[in-house]
Length: 338
Picture (spheres, rainbow, N blue to C red):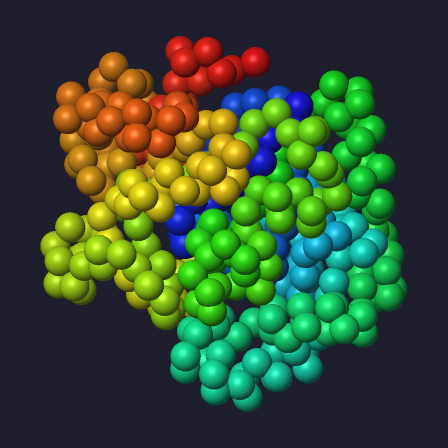
């Protein structure tokens, strides 16, 4: 079985939490991370907070193999630091064709006033490395001896797992509306962040996919420049308890109420089969840390049911707190659990 987890808005939706939950509660044999170090995924588990920039959030499952896709861009310092910090050496692997971000790419972006002042780039060297990749001069993982023990042909690895009946989880990056093609251009990232683009980075086609899980936060946030329909003033964001900082840059996230129009379009763009919802407790405080659907306050249940009617797919996972375990899992009740 192959499941793909995709961000439904502008990133920061809680994909890391959802992936970690699935890894702990399902029999996941392999997890793949795509994208690059400009996207941080946060996992709070066992009383500890983990901020991940390249290793899959499924690391919490000690029996799960961890992979980085061919379309990803890796910074060696970030990669080796996370491997050591998380203790995942021996079960983390990098596709031999993954791209490598070098110091020159970071320096190039640091000098670019347009990226820094107009677009609000994270300046991690990702865009500059992507330019070199398109121009066919980027060095790949196979060119670095220090990565030799980590290298694999990811397509072969995943195909063997899927062909033997295994379960593969793919962790997308950022959010649908940061897609280079389908987002709020030019205020976007340097890759396609929809399910199709994510699959391309991994090396698997759409017919292999069983589930596309679209992750929405119960309100909308985005970092940096670009349109945000219904954006609230800072004072109102603080009053609602929605003030957040980006995990990579530390910048304040702008916020707006849940956007049904963006959500419906994201379902179409990603061919989503189910939705995961996070931070319900930030909109309905009495739902904090609730783990059973029947114990949610009535107004929260009505809101979720109205959301399902609006977007046309079931909301199967509902996050009600920061920890990975603060999750309502409705998959069996809704008949989508295999």
